[in-house]
Length: 191
Length: 177
Ligand SMILES: [Zn+2]
Image (cartoon, rainbow over all chains, first blue to last red; front, side, top):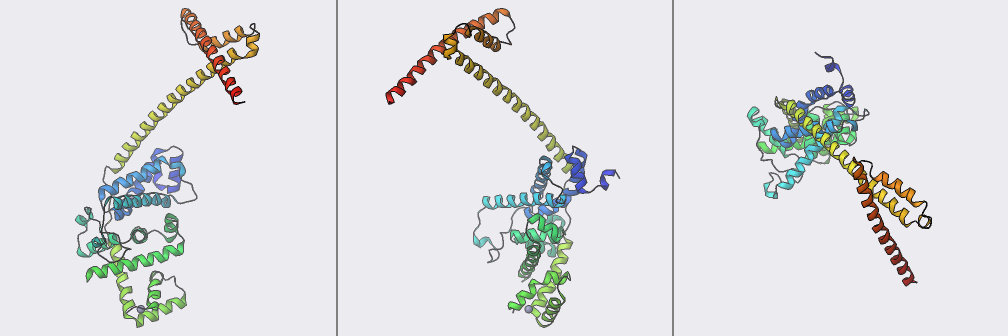
């Protein structure tokens, strides 16, 4: 193990800001898989998700001096990736035209089912698994985001509050509402 | 069938599960769940949902991910070097243009300056100084002579033009009066 592995994210970004490119590579190694798991849940396409994670790191590289030590590096990079993912979703929505009949539910809090190819189906094709993936896909964006951050990425309420720039109380209530939405969707799918 | 209390109880589920509710609120949820089968069902299903979320497979980036990224960064760096080079030569050209403009402006000023016109002894000195500033890069002496004589002719033409336009301006002012 090299010495660089023992360093905190914040130490690595500081080294990178000082010109050490190896520190950047170490940050890429630490975050690439975490970010792909985060971003994939929005885009449901592995190629697009990888592209978006690449864009995230390119932004970090180009804007390394925008990072200030007052925030954790993780919340900073999740914010960048989350913003990119949301703007990609908005672009997709503009590209596609939907009618309300495309929706599986008479609930405008749900977004249309994504018809993009589902890479994950190959590795995760149990009925129960498919069910929950479908349910996540159908969640409205704010609920989807909070479920991904809290229940899939297992981030703390405090970090989520920083990433989404909303108060802790709102994070907690949104997590609860999102979970209830998910439970409601799953029970609807089973009926 | 759920009522307002059911909605309130369901809102507490996350904190109830994490055991962060006050003792009073926790016992209110306990009591409600024991009596309301609808909420008890939701709570139980919520637990299953959370279990399923935990079981989602972990995805990984492709093996070439970092190599592709670093290649893109290298390309980016090369682009920015080219951009800087372009910018600097552009700035240099702009600088030369401004300098040339200033020299012409100063030259014009001398020619139409009434003091230098009325005192011809002073003007050649200035003119020679300006001319030598204009041609510092000429390599041959012959070239210097040629270009300086051309410039003097041009400057004279400009001088007349300037005087003409000056009188036109005056005339316009007179007209408006
Ligand atoms: Zn109830």
